[in-house]
Length: 211
Length: 211
DNA sequence: GCTATTATTTAACAATTGTTAAATGGTTTT
DNA sequence: AAAACCATTTAACAATTGTTAAATAATAGC
Image 1 (tube, chains in turn yellow, green, red, cyan):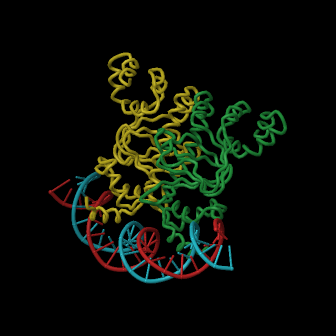
Image 2 (cartoon, chains in turn red, brown, orange, blue):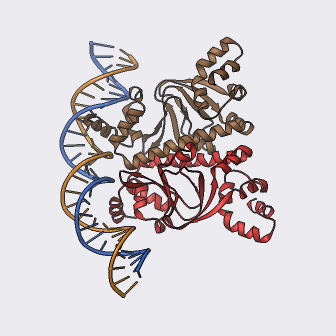
Image 3 (tube, helix red, strand yellow):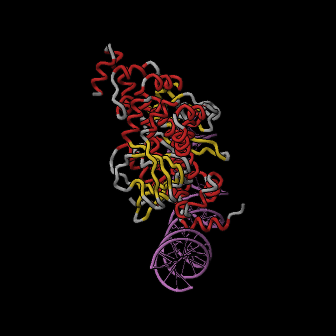
């Protein structure tokens, strides 16, 4: 089905190949949720933008009004905020997932959260107005948005369970198991934050793990 | 606006008053998100069911396939699962909010989570099929669903920040501040779970708090 | 390659939270 | 009212995590 969509979607070969290269991950991700035909996909094709971020470059800054969402085509983003003079990383986006500073995106008030690139990143972005346009004009897109955020909520709840029931060591082991490549690209200080412990505690914990 | 809707919505006085009594909280909640007219509201009026739960009665059990969502018209629900022979409470629903075992509700697989009544509860419930019907036939409902779950996600992320940056004492103080009435109706063991600490630790912490 | 910078580790000690077990207090049932 | 049950507190000790400070390792810039 996915292949079929692809074949009909892009008219000429060159464009087809270029788009395949660029948007395959996004289309794969979307197709998990809603069964899109070529017209549905066309509706987004003109709306999205492909951007590159260098390591440590900021996608959404503190005080910005978040007006775009990113899909990580490549690389890792982190979401953090400044707390007591320190940066507290709340989330590290897995490859091929969505991120924005949602409180600001929803309310259109200045963001307290910052989103920046841990590694060099390639992002597929869509502007809030365009997304809103899709939501209002294509019920399927609204449905897609709802389903994606539902899954993000469930994952978030799973993480809360892990804070309640698991030790930091267990959380670390499970993170490694779930995202084994992450450890190569993401500095430990961000991972420590994500796990809810201090960098030094993570380091100590890593030393004493018996696998 | 809300009043206006009400006036047009219900034809005869008796029905109007009864419904006002029953569904006011729900309609208030919904109206925060989407501007509904009387027709929109009518679309739900025939779909929802009002049910009463006694204290400790179960709304969705482990192994059930979650096929309904609850709005807490009155009383407190808790969401927990059985972990290592113990019940781990992940969430306590505030008054006038939605709850379901979402992973099961989404996937239609047996629920690992249990939802039960902490106090006597009055719930407004809607069946999954009916909600699905509303989603598919009324874009506004899909929109409502998306916006509610977005807010739930944001709240969930806020809680993750609190696990990362705050001590249990701070989390407890903030909970008291946010939901001062909760402490009267909800046993401390559930609150301890919610905060991610043991009952005994919460008790110790309560003793040493300097306000 | 050398230097400066950043990332990670190490260690000693402090604070917080968990564990176990028992006591106290409150409610419900009989 | 007494008994049984559940909720909460208390306490001693254990385990985990935080704090501070420094050493070592790795990386980036020159």
